[in-house]
Image 1 (cartoon, rainbow, N blue to C red):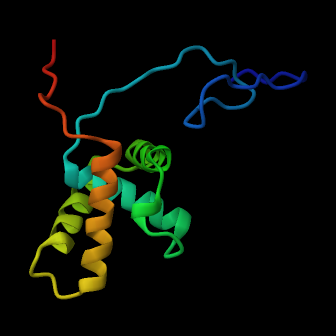
Image 2: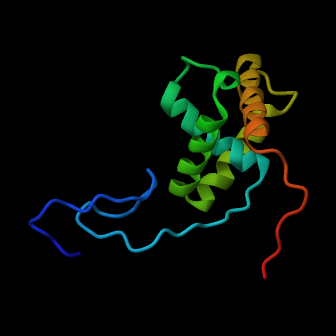
Length: 127
């Protein structure tokens, strides 16, 4: 890391920047991630719950918020956390789940995911 005594270089990257304020931005790397609907719902629910708590229902979240919640949490969650979160949400969405209020919330998260991320027709194959 190069420390400058001048004003720090401000990153031109979006809010997901890993650039230290004193480092010069060198590149913007985009990473494609293929996730299941359950994994995506887990990432969205975690973000929405952290941001709103119980103050706003998932049906009221905007597409921009839903995408931010998903991208932020997928960036910060390990693959194991993402998998376990997806499995847990799938269990809570099961018709036989005993807590109707929790199940209703989880189904609203899945509706939010479907609004922001329509299902792909075909999973892209590696080159």
